[in-house]
Each structure stands twice: as C-alpha cells, then as structure tokens.
Image 1 (cartoon, rainbow, N blue to C red):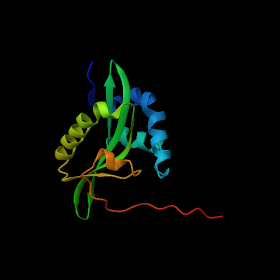
Image 2: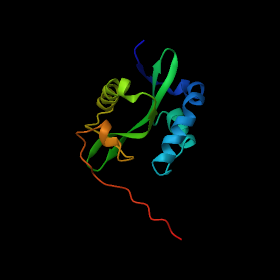
Image 3: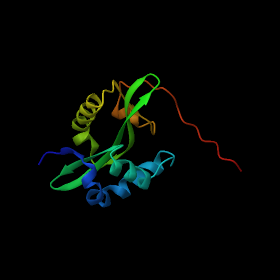
Image 4: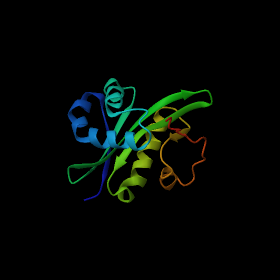
Length: 137
C-alpha cells in the first residue's frame, strides 16, 4: 500500500492531534525546544498553520506542521515541525505536497529550520543561518 500525504483541516485537528502529538513534541525537543506540540496544536486548530499527515495502511507514520509567513523578503512556507518513520518512502511525495501548499499561499520559498540532517531532506537548500546554544553554568 503506498503512502498518502494529507492536509488536515482545522475542524479535524482535535481528532487527529492525539495520534501525532508525541512525535511532534519529540521533533520540537530535538531541534532546541523553542516551540512545543501544544503551541503547534493551537496554531493548527486556529487555521494559522497546516498539519500534514503521512498515512500508510490507515496508520499515521509521520506528520509535519507548516505556516505561511510574510518575511521582509517575501512570502515563505515555513516548516515548524517534522517527524516520521521510513521517510525515504514518502519524503518526495511530502515535499511535493508542501510545494503545493506554498504556491496556494503565494510563497516562493520553503523555509526549514532544524538539525543539520535537514540538508539530507533538502540537498539543494541554501543555508541562511545556524542556531547556536551556549549553556550557562
């Protein structure tokens, strides 16, 4: 059975969120913890962000949260969280769906902030900045 990438409407967020919240929270913590699953739930529920789920055999195997933002340099489609199993099997299809969302939102770029591993997902990406953390003793 192939993977299916679906946008989840705000009216279905409460129903779906319980299946993705742990994965979303884990992804948030791995990338520095500047946001969390609860905040992203409120963004998706209000319609300010879009939840995408990846489904195989009626099971959610991955999810991502995206938001259209106006930056001084123009409209962007920004990844707020991404997690999943067997990403190689569905990533290309997922990226295509994200590009469709970006175009609908009049964005001309996709922005993804995260671990260095994101370059494997978007090998053609230009690195705009890096986030550094200095622990205080």
